[in-house]
Image (cartoon, rainbow, N blue to C red; front, side, top):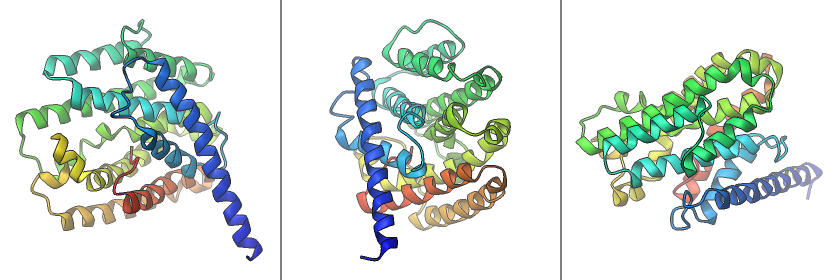
Length: 288
């Protein structure tokens, strides 16, 4: 085997080992928050898909550096399940959102979901830059939770949606919240200084992931009664065309980031590539 192929194999092996190490941390987290991660909804594949996505997006990182990104993504999945499959009334959804935002502002947590969020908040608080950047983190958290709540209402009322209105609610996917948390915790100085600009780029990537996740999980969403873009009367061809356009738009926004923070640009670009490849083979995927 040529040396370059050996080098490639080494990097792939290292990245998979990184994902496995991150997975052990997430399983420990799941054990800490009683009832938030039932085995029926969070099997081994769930943790593996999540940590593979993070590891392949930033293969140069350590498990410690990816800790917040992984935990934030796991928290998003847990809250998404609570909204989609546990809440039965609008008041329950609104109460969960209020409690999460209150904890983000410093309140004492009163549930497993808010305890997990409080621990995430406190871990971010170990970074001195968090004091100045906390408002962005809190704002993106609010956008994510509001998006989840809006999606619940759409499903409950059988709202008639367009592709554009569906895409405008992409914050419900939560990937931008994960990115913002990750960058506050471990990014370079340029990225932290330009975090609001990076959030705009991340949200464009998120729109692509929002569609990709629905295409990959279409059959599962139908069986569970979840909202899915392909169940809105939008054709697969229209969704594919929109994804192609979004990928191009995201690439255009990512390219200028390279000059200031090359690894941040690669991280964003690899999110699109990994998730597209993973979903294409597995029929599902993290696509947070």
